[in-house]
Structure formats: structure tokens, C-alpha cells
Amino acid sequence: MQDILIDKVHDEIRQGEVFSPEMVNNNFAYNKHFYIESYGCAMNFADSEVVASILHDQKIGATNILDEADIILINTCSIREKAEERIRKRLTEFRQLKKKKPSLIIGILGCMAERLKGDLLEEEKLVDIVVGPDAYRTLPLLLEEAETGQKGVNVLLSRDETYADISPIRLNSNGINAFVSITRGCNNMCSFCVVPFTRGRERSRSALSIVAECEALYNEGYREVTLLGQNVDSYLWKDETINTNITFANLLEKVALVSPLLRVRFSTSHPKDITDEVLFTMKKYDNICNYIHLPVQSGSSRVLEMMNRTYSREWYISKVNRIKEIIPDCGLSTDLIAGFCSETEEDHQASLTLMEYCKYDLAYMYFYSERPGTLAARKFEDDITLEVKKRRLQELVALHRIHSLESMQKDVGKVFKVLIEGNSKKNNQEYYGRNDQNKVVVFPKLHFKKGEYALVKINECTAGTLIGQAIL
Image 1: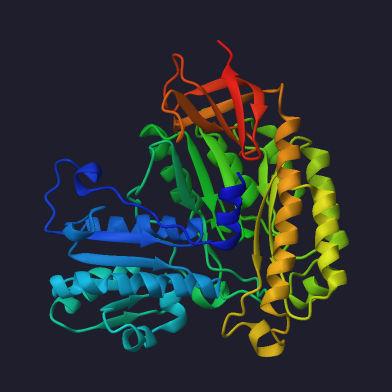
Image 2: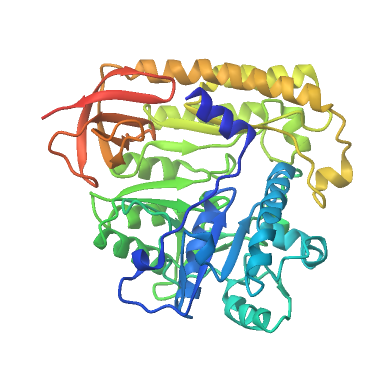
């Protein structure tokens, strides 16, 4: 767990593998192949699956072998400076491939494309196309033009694009878990965040298309869906056929009713928007997992005001209390930023004491990285030294390690319903899955199969894994 936690703290970028074309469709003849890497949050991984579907319709199939690729796409993240640095480094690694294969097309997708736009073509000479999150439908045309040597950029943001009519092709899938996007963009103007500028204004996807996608996934054998949005709780879609607004709580219920065997998770919740209606819906349906990602960012009310989070420390604590009151066994995770502009030692201690109060099961922690164009970059001085930022971050990490282990130890002796997702990475004689609270559980295989549920009694634990035995 400690090694995994360090990765999550210091390196928010994850590289996604993709299926080879024959794994996507055994009987489909592709004219070309693309290789795609996704970095950052789950939204980017979900977007890559939309891209795969768009290219599939043009007979361009996925490959996980770089040398096979006619097209290399990088779906990028701009949320932290380190993310962009890693992506630029990755681009330099493709130079030799381009030299060996001059016809190779290299494209930058996503938030970094939106933020830097045409500058990427000048800064990274080997890049051929730059496509923002709302312009993926234009990829086929841009690729066609790139084949003639014409470089292209489309980073136009949309007020209505949701890709609701596109059935994503699942990349790097275990066949059990799937992401389903329900909103795009964000209306919360947090002062440190580039998302409103790189993904545009918030808009909600049709509830009918979301439920249909979840039904299709269940029929294909998937047993867990995660509903994704920058702020899922502000989901709102009007069903014109019955002249009724569908809220996030309504949507949760509709997805839960697809089947009691389909687990439902969601991310991310904004503390100001999660409602009692959502919490009572979670409590009502056993297949809606008792787990909430509730980013706090700081434990100091002064810093929260500077961040434009629109809530105070006390308000956030009251929301945590309400969650625990309605769903006593609810798992809770968060995001925390160390060293935001003007953060004092007193502010830092406020974050530590908030962690002591909430005792998060999981926390994603980073030191502040100023992003060009944000309100914080324009209005505040990034005046905390890197040395202090790193020291404060390590203090947050150290405290969370204690809470994580304590949380795991409390579960020893309990019995959990675990969805089997595949083999344990360390032992192929054991299965790996997660319980309702999103904790990893491993146990001997016995007669169970992947995609089935098993009741598992927990006998021991590490800081990151519950270890148990299935109850026959």
C-alpha cells in the first residue's frame, strides 16, 4: 500500500494500455491501427473509449504494439505541471519511431491540447494534430488531412457536446468494470483548477442514453459501472417526454434498477452539491456502493475561500457527519492540496486536524502546482517554497498511512460481499476484488468465477489490502 500511495501522491499520471484490434472485434478488417495512451483522471480514460469508437467506424482499430501503429494518440491531462512535463517527455520518446516511419501520425488530445492549442505544433515539432475534448468527432477528417502533410488543430469548446450517441469501445477492460460519463465540463470556478477552461461549461447527458449504456454493459457481462463527471451531483437533465427534470439521485436510482447484480459507483462529488436525496438513494439500493469521493482540498476555511470552494471547514465537517449519519459504513476518500498560495503553518495544521476528524479510507494528495490562466495564477502569488510544499505533503501522507491501516484493521473479522474482478497480481491462485467501500480484497479462488460475487471473511490485512477466505 505504501508504494502504491507514494505513486498516487507524487505521480497522478497513469498510462493506459489498449486492446489489440482482434480483441475489439475478431471479424472486422481494419485499414489502419492506432495506439493510444491516457493520462490523468478517469474522465480521460472514458474519453479514449469514445475516441476508439469514432476511429473504429473509420476502420481504424486499436493496437497495444507501438510498432504496429499508423497513428499514436496521447490523451492528456493539464491539471498539474508535472502531468504536462511527463507528457512532453513521452513525446520525445516517439521521435525515433517517427524517424523510422515518416508516415506515422502523432496527435495530442484532451486538456493539454485545449490549454496550449496551436502552440503545441510549434513547441513539439513531431505533433501533427491537436484535438480538444469536445472535438473528437473531427478526428477522422484531421487524420485524413495529416496524411497529406497538413497539420491540424480543433480545440473548439461546445455547450452541448456529450457524445451521448456514441457507444464507447472498452479499452484495457477486464470485462467487469466500466466507466460511464454522465456530464462534461464544470461550472465550479475553483481558483486553482484549469478544468472549466479545458473542458468548458457543464452539460448533462441524456438519462435515457446513460441507462441504455448501462443496460448494454450488463448484458455484455459487466457487473460494475462508475458514473463519471467533474461534479456528478449537479447532474440535471430534462426529460421532455414527461416534462420532468432528472436529478443525480433520480439517475442513480434508474441505473440501480438495471439489475441488482450491477454495482453502481460514482465520482466525483462536490461537497456543496451532494444532497440528502442522493444519500437516501444510496441507502435504499444495496447495489449502489457505500463509497463517496468528497474532495476537501484544504482544512482551512481561509484557504478554502481563496480556492473558491464555496464552503467552510465547518460546513464540510457537517456534510461528513450527515453522510455517516445516513450511511454509517460509508467509505470516504478525498483530495488534498499542500502549499496553496499563502498557506500558513496554521492552515496546514488545519488540514491535518481535518484528516484526523474524517479519517479517510483513501486520500489523493499533491502539492500545489500553479496552472497558467487560472484565477489563482492571476490573483495570488505562488509564495510557498517547493521545500515547504514537499514537507507539508509528506506530513499529510504520513498521517494518511496511519488512518489507512487503522481503517483496514477495523475490517478484520468482518464478512464482505466482494465482486471478483480477476486474479490477484501477486498470486494467480487468488482472486482480486473490492468490497462495497472500495477496499481491495484478495482470497483463494475455490469454485468462484470472475464476475461473480463472493462472501469473504477477512482474516488479516495490510495497509492497502484485505486478505480473507470465501464462505462456502
